[in-house]
Length: 275
Image (tube, rainbow, N blue to C red; front, side, top):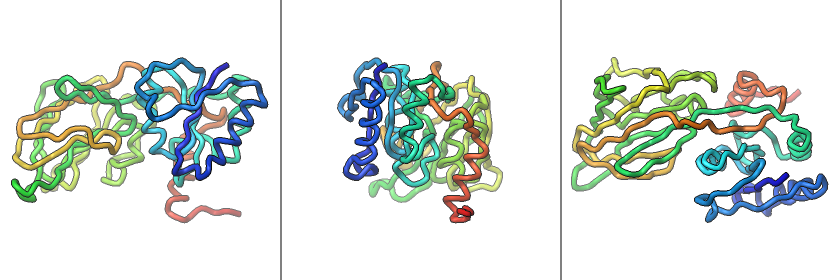
């Protein structure tokens, strides 16, 4: 068995969790390789990818893991860590579970974002959002939405966001969009700071192709899982669809999305009962 180990150097200060993980892998006779940032474009074969960090770390690794068909085992060294299954004191549990084949498979749908000849992957969301340009001024973004070549709506505001079920607990959640079961076969489209009361989130089938077209003159950009990837101009269009292959997470056998949801949201609100 061979695994990859990636650790966020900012989250895992001094590599404490990484060292503990490596010691455990060696103890259980599991071959490992440290995955560096400059290797994320490579084709690599492995039985699992241990990701030490927070949700941002998982998002950075999602495209690499999916393209190489490597399941992710997330170890939370951040704050909320909603996507991570194990905490730092659970490292031994994660290793033993992997070695014995006792971890549960959890498949998640990803978004494919196409612009010109480039394609980007997103686990959580893609959004078009206005950015400030002195030459244009601080004008609102005007965006036209089409699903399967049918006109849906025209949004005026700060932009719009397309979210996967996994991402429904992220940016779109803060915009008032619904939380989706992680295995629902749908995406959510939500306007950002819309200038009309009738512009509300829309849930649609993930088999559909959504075209987001810039119809106004405001300076806007495309963000994929929070990362700016392209600046857009008037009449530019991006297409958002489902990635054919799902991303695989390995989790504890007793994993329950709704139980974890309640725990993490209460924890972030400071209302957890520690007794």
